[in-house]
Length: 323
Image (cartoon, rainbow, N blue to C red):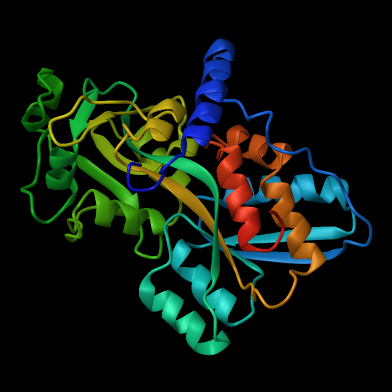
């Protein structure tokens, strides 16, 4: 997360306060500095979202919240992977394109070629990309180097004892690998940041959705895979992760904000916004809801980490909705 979140002293103060409150309540909480959402007149219509599977649940939650304020609205969510978002925006098939990674330069260039300006990406939430194992697995931590060897073609077929597991039931047993398909932003992020852009092993069992990865590991004693922290269930556990000889840390709001957890990331929502024109009310109010207290409470409800008030203000400014 070091490369993702660079907080000012003011934002760091907000984070410290929110984390202290969260720890006192035993859960991540949303900052009181975020605005309450207030409905306006004349908003109706259908919003279409095409993109990240990781963000399916939180997009649906935002849609449900939005409909409470505006009964005449509907949000349709199609989550087949982050790579489906850019073409959907270019072809006008969707107003929003959620992505669990940033757009690639080639995707931005293709968009700009058609419209004459770049797509606008909004940092809507924070996710710790977790490395999961079965709940009964004796392994509790892994290094980034080990993870690269386990999942990439650069490493041999790994067995559990090679990762330090001494349990006789795991001796000589190969690690059974689960992951996402190539359309997924989670796949792309893990490949870039953990595998150092090397290819995945051919025996990774690719799943079409984030929950599929977790379900696969839950039923496989020797399974290991990667997925968003919001998809954790009682049947799996996540490993602490260590980077470059450092201390192994668990994925959490605290370690994501501080930059200690090495594979935390923003969850993005892209949209087609021409800065020369005001954003239409339907999209504009939906964006305001995302960055309101109600919107970020939805982020927490779905197992992700809320953005800071400073980040929320910065994102609203991008689309002409803040100062």
